[in-house]
Image: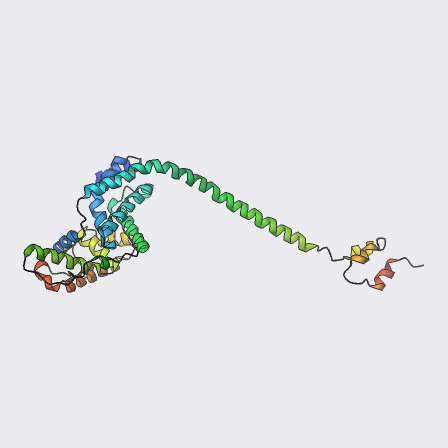
Length: 122
Length: 186
């Protein structure tokens, strides 16, 4: 049975030629350069930990602050829109029988029938 | 898996820089070659390989010492090289001398060999990045299809296809150098 062309084995000569093309030369200088960074890394790591810890604390703090602001704005809007200042309720109109000044702040002129009904019949 | 390598990884995870240094020594050549296969330029390749070793050190706690270290590291190398390539927009082919690309064999044996290697480098640089990495990891570094699939995060079938097409394209590009090409490619 013929094997698939994709069932290949490594080719020694191809590997050797590729290695020759890709080899960057002596590894010692490279290893020394990396190890210099590795040794310096321990010192820098301490600093990084500080910032990582502060960052870890700051993120939920900021999220909580943002959520508080959103809730506060939402609560203010909800309460503000529930009873706008220039709307007159039936209760206000009844109270107006003794506080005539309320009529001066109403947006619409009062209904005459409504006002007469508020006074006791003579 | 090499027991000593596993022991080195465990010691390195415990904070032993010398153990990590031993791993760097073992994998320096491989990491440099794979990074260079991606980037084309040896200096860029070395920078990427160094980035990869430092990244591996930072994330060493994520490595499972029961698994081989090589594929885990090569995955980091491949990513570091790809990142650097994206950042610098390195075109490997641009780094090569056009005067030597595609030239036929010369009279002198050593000159001939150097010209062959340059032509080979050009042919390699002309391959798509993934094919370059697949053929390098398979034919130079000896990783299996399954390991390469894990390193490059692609299906095994794609690895097989990439190696096949990379070899075929290299052979086509190097037809005039058949005397350097002992084995049948593909």
